[in-house]
Amino acid sequence: VPLQASGGGLVQAGGSLRLSCATSGGTFGVYIMGWFRQAPGKEREFVASINWSGSSTYYGFPVRGRFTISRDNTKNQMYLQMNSLKPEDTAVYYCAADLPPTTFPKILESSYDVWGQGTQVTVSS
Image (cartoon, rainbow, N blue to C red; front, top):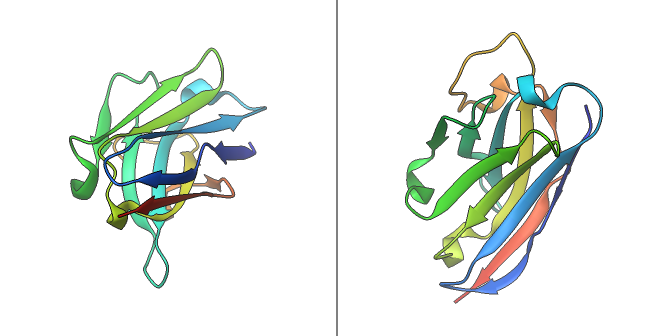
């Protein structure tokens, strides 16, 4: 179940970016999916998680109200819409999959089985 994250870049504070996570192979619709981020010198941090159908989501406190996680099971893709970006959002963003059997939500890094390679998001002040 390889995961490929994309969509990162450089944006000014207050701007928006949309990250994507694509997978091929496996049965995407049965995976719990999540986004994490890691800033330089810091531990990896939970950002958001979404259940199998996309009907339930869960967010880390720093991004609530600004970020939106979604998925399209027909395209085997997950997204992270990031609005009102702040310099403290600067990090490498990783997508991850929790393979069945599983429950929702999943906020611990150790709960996820497969990780993408990460995409850099830089927010300038």
